[in-house]
Length: 196
Image (cartoon, rainbow, N blue to C red; front, side, top):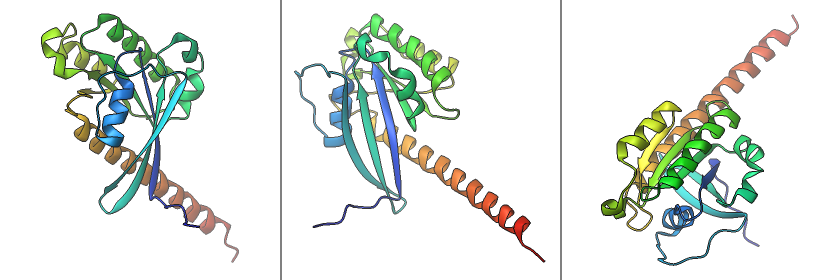
């Protein structure tokens, strides 16, 4: 039996947004590099993995897509607190989708663990001619909640490599800082507990 691959880092990313914002398509493009034009809505939660290497370190990203149905949003608090990062996705051609994302960015900021990266994604950038949400509106909303902002296209993959690269580097740096702090604390405790 083959041993499971060990990873230097493993991060859990939760993806929220109204149904039809393109969450499943984004996850498929990130993990498999594919886009399917017609798909069914996610029921409850969908889960996929993406493995990457950055600076000779292996990283596994767990992408948890949460259904956009109100019925499944009632469990948001526990999902927000368990995430290493949170993505809020809206469709740039749908005002309702943007309003939903605005509401949930505020919820994420309130309920996520401190310093958890929150990203606001304006998806379907390939449909610019049908745009109803201006790029500046998305950028301003992200700024209001100290979130990162990206415009993406699940169809073309635009913006996704940069997003994943930046987010993964940020998470690796944050994890490295936590490990350094833990090591320092252990060293201090060891030094203080030595008997002379």
